Length: 259
Image (cartoon, rainbow, N blue to C red; front, side, top):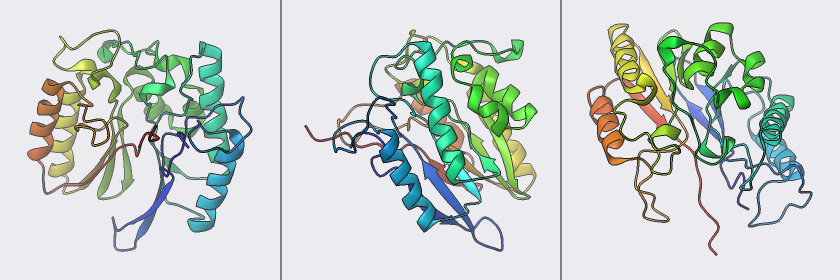
């Protein structure tokens, strides 16, 4: 099973005096034309329904939904199919889980694979890549959160009085990102924003979870770097400066089928 692939996980997080619950859904890779539930293929709607039903039986009412991207199958799509697939997948999740706190994170497969146009977030407005698939988030996010997401793909959420969730746009850091923008030291000014946000979290005596899609690692399965080296080093330098406040870093769970 190439889609979902064990990435629907339930976990417990003690971010306040009372333990809270997190549901993590990633790499659904939904193919709307499939009906079977076969190993080695992308997810059919039936398979996603089955996974969501099981997840709800384990964790009926999570406090936080980490939805970390790659909703779309591993096949070529036009823009309308991309938008419909992202919308359908998220709507199915919402039918099973009515969660107040949900992250908006996009993966490399949510567009034309790894193609993400970098724009200047200071100018505002909708990023053309994000705009292709942003419809589900307009209702799920507050107006201010949606505006931030729509222009740059990253934002932060105050989940509890002393806990912030920081969601990153990791696609521009990928070694496979198109068009080639590795000449940029800080795509979307995200590193500057991340450092500033962590300083604010620290000043307020709070803690942070950092979530995204593509992890800044060497892939254990294929032995390939997931980020451009300079971005990996910049990110590492930032997070190493805040060891006491960063309580978790969450990325996709994605293991290719052995074939």
